[in-house]
Structures are given as C-alpha cells and as structure tokens.
Length: 367
Image (cartoon, rainbow, N blue to C red; front, top):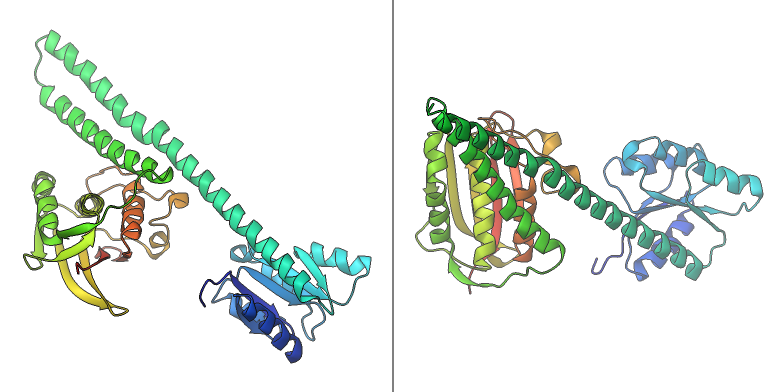
C-alpha cells in the first residue's frame, strides 16, 4: 500500500464490524489484518507485529480482556498499542480495560472520525517514542565510544610510549620492537575509529550527502584490496576476486570506498590466519532496474542467528573480537548501511557460525 501509515490488527467476532473497520482503515491508507477470535489474534502475532490492535471486548471463548492479557504476557508484544472497542462504558469495564493492558477505548457504535483521530494520535506518539529511543541509543553509543573505545587505545599509546622512553634513556632496546608494535596498532585503531566517528557524526547532523557520479566499481575494489594488503599479509589471508575489469555504477565514490574498506577490514578481522576472502561483483536486474551486486565473502568465524539481527543497528551496540583479538566498535557496519541507503542500494548479510559470512550490497548501474 502506497504511503501506508501503519499496520493495524482488527480483532472482532462480528463479520460486519470487521468489514466496516477494514473499509475505514483502507480508505485512510492503513494496512490491516483481521482476526475473528482472540486465539486467531495470538496466532497472527506469532508471525507479524502490527503497530496497533483494535480489540473487541465481547467475544466468545476468550473475551477481549483475556486476549489483551495474553498478548502482553510476551515481551515482544509489550510495545504494541491496544485500543478496546466496547459498548460497555461503565466504570468497572473501563478500569478492567486499562488494567489488562489497553491504552485507550472507543465506544460502540463508533464514530469513524473519532476512531481515526485516536489511531492517528497513538501511532504518532509511538513513532515519536521510537525516534526518541533511537536518539538516546545513538547518544549512548557515542559516549561509549568516547569513554571506552577511544580512551583505551590512546592510553596504550601513552603508556607504552613512556616505557619506550625509559628504555631508550637507559639504552635498553630489548623490548623496543614490542612497544613500537603496540603503539602502532593502538594508533592505527584510533585513527580508523576517528575516521568512522567523524563520518558518522556528519551523518547525524545531516551535513553529509551523497554526490553521485559514474565510476568504475572494479577499480575501486582493486584499490581497496591493495590498501589492506599489509593486513592480509600479516594473517596470511588470500583475497580472491571474480569480477570484470569494468563495472560502472552511479553512486558517491567516496562513500562506497568507505563501505568497501569497512567490509574488507571486517572480513580480515574475523577470518583466521591462512583463510580466504572472495570478492565477486556482477550485473543483476532488481525490479527491472539494472544493479551491480557485490559480495565480500570470508571463511571466518561467522555470526550467530541471534546476533545477525543486531547488525546495522546503533541501539544494539553489537561488537566482538576478531580471530587475533582485534577490537571493533560495530560503527563501521552502521556507516555502511547509511552510505548504501543514501546511494539507493541495499545491504544484507548471510552467515553461519564456524563457516563464514557474506556481506552483499547493491548499487545502481551507470546509465
């Protein structure tokens, strides 16, 4: 449905009521599902999560109050708003409606304008609450990076620099190479983090927008592969490629370079010594639009199904150590999603624990 305002589940045992409510919602650009009993509503909620439920109170077998309680018993349903539809306006019925988990009620026979006004208000409040929660999660992520992920490596640089300084003063050079190596790794991690942090912060304030032009994606892939050659050599990881010399796309070249760099760095991080990374890119048609699909596949440690759902989400704060204990913040993947979205593409991941991961993104082919 074009310009869909939200999804609503209608629960009512009366077929005529279902028909009337469905007509009102359809005319006002709401998607909807229908259930003729509380049990059917519970079955639907196992597969889909609407924004709001219109719930009749007087139903056989399981009334609206019991249905509401059973819906709210599950953690994943707590955020779903429920408006009761009732002919009972006595104080006890209203109190029971709120006590069972209802957010609001509309009396029968209902007025369409009143019902829509209440639906619109509650869905708007839900959207605002979700946006506020996301902003708070973004703020928390930012402070987490500043207070922990940024301070720790800088502390390492300062600490080992002091040790190196003392050893040089005493003309003891036995640990110099170890200290320099730690300083280099800490400094490199800090620089990569600052680059991602800067780009991410620019996105948040809306000061970075894609500037699209036609460029050769194949060349950009090769340039980024060359850029990580030192990292791949350290872990003896071979990078195999399978794409033609010229694959032109229409996108922001700097943004896509950042995406490729982050995906390659992640693949190297989570691939064991002696492993393999394979990069493929090819033309595909998606909804009759010519696209270029690129896959960066590793044979590393993989990602569990539970953690797959946490990727690309700032509020989940997902991060893990690489095969050589390499650190990360999870910020790189969030940047990748932002940049691919700004370039009219899609990004997804396929993964299996102890088998490996494939990060796949699409971009519009140059016309």
